Image (cartoon, rainbow, N blue to C red; front, side, top):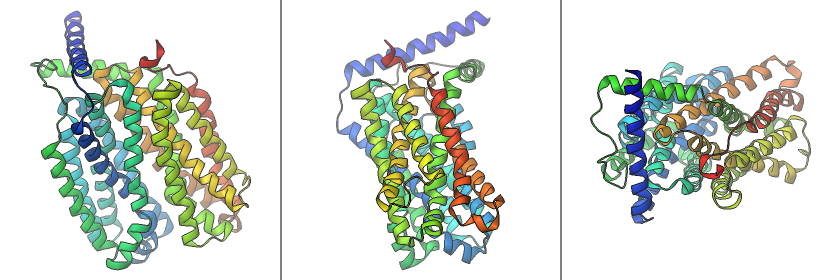
Length: 441
């Protein structure tokens, strides 16, 4: 019986591989590929917009909802915790239901969350709205990458994933000055309700025009019984959880993205304004530099991996090592009194974090292709958990340093230290990963 189950699983893998070979041999990049990319980038744009939007409206939130700093932190983290835990059902369902349906359904839930957040009368309603936003935006990056595994060849994947990240990250920029201008004109509540409606319209349009693959589905999946599905799921979960590369790559992305978003999305503003007496506009300009660096790194990292170095592993190590170096500059305030070097430090933080996005292409390249969705969502769980954990940890550390140091360099140096240690350790551990299959021969 066991041999029969393994045989059925191998048969499905071979069927999937035949479809992949059919795609590689019979398709070329066309306007359909470009259109797919633009729509995936549009949905990911909203994901990045919502996750960064609290920073610019934090003062209004504290005033209108009577939030303490601790509650403001909890409100911000609720998005990321909901996002992270949603990766579990996405991992189980993405390869079975298809990215199109899951991305559409969840994005519609997220648009409802934006409206609830805009109507919130207090802390509890706001947390529900932000949690629904995190839940609803949870598939827009991973789902897009799952579509790319069907529409683009393996050697194009890292480039396309990097371009997706770079294009979608423009949403972070939209959540800064443009959102501030909109909030000044109509208020944060109307802004979020309007954006929620626009997000819903985009999700419906996406569902109508996007298809999961550019080639016919015949031969890629047959009649599969419920028992067979459960058997395949168990086999795939064992394959994932007993794979050393999965845990090492997850460790790297936990510290990489957690550090970036905790600093860029919350603590960079207070750090710059309290320690260096910058105005909100000046601090915002430096933070925008981090976002620009992230866009450049995300786009360039894929190109560097696909076209120049021919490696996923060592590009990811470059990103982690660069982040460790820039975080070290923040931890010990190296050169931070120099405005130019300070701006360069924050730009580099985003740049190396973006380069590190190649971890998604790396995990796809070391796992069986039919498990792409599960593998990508598996590491994305740790990516988003890293944000919530780092936001909480830095706040927890700041709360426990002496009061006279909390708003000074000593307090923030102490808060940034765990991130530096984690990044340095993750960089060393990453050397023990295998190279992606497309570059290991």
